Image (cartoon, rainbow, N blue to C red; front, side, top):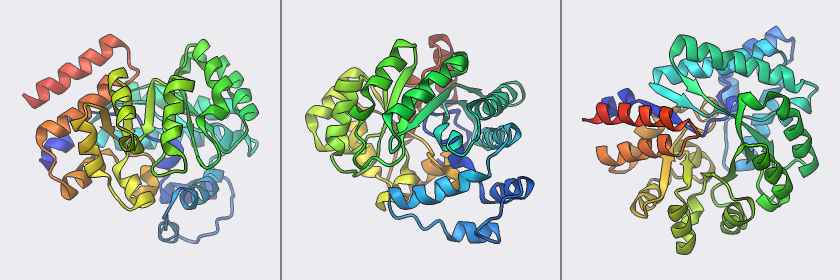
Length: 332
């Protein structure tokens, strides 16, 4: 089963590029950009990864982001992830990036996206990995800031396939960004939003994603299981739910394997992803392997989870069909 998972062609739809920043790379960038670090070694950084909830994770996550300064930094960040994705036999990716986390530090939007895009082109040409970029808004920032960054993005419309919403969910419901996402849809962007595990009013937030925002996909979304009608609505719309098991274990002390099985049983299009693998120390294959260590997932269930990733991706229909045929050939 481990070999089957490792060699399986995969899609990843829920990975934050800033969350792929490895401790060794943090130090290399800090030295290059002459940034003094609080920690003396990469091992000290790893020892500080004592996450127990979403805010404790975000505090370290945003602090480390400060080493990213130049276009070359963003190219390296992104291409390093693609190299690691290639090891996992990932053939298609829809990575997130958080421009507000950089523009707020004086790094221009152009610097960020030019570096990322160069890496996407290089990954396609050298590694055979196709990708479509998703711009996320920080939900603990203002809706006005999100709108400003949406307007900034329009100059790069051909490089961005969709918009998302991440960061601290407390007191920041989807409805706060209703106008921003309405304009994003008018501009042709696909829509997704994080509905993190066990947040306050989380079931209501998922309903807002469906009814107020009309998302094309939901990131996380495990708590939909608390409302059977909500589960039925998600399933009937064919919405994807991008679940990140190892991330969940850090934040809620569970891989949520039984919840994933429950979603499969309800014919919900749940799929598996790595979230912030540089911090959680687990890339996509690692997440699958953790699942089968904790619970008995059959080969058919593993295939179904991966099939859902391709099916609910925003790849072109012809491209999506090609990936699904490739996956079918692999399993037969």
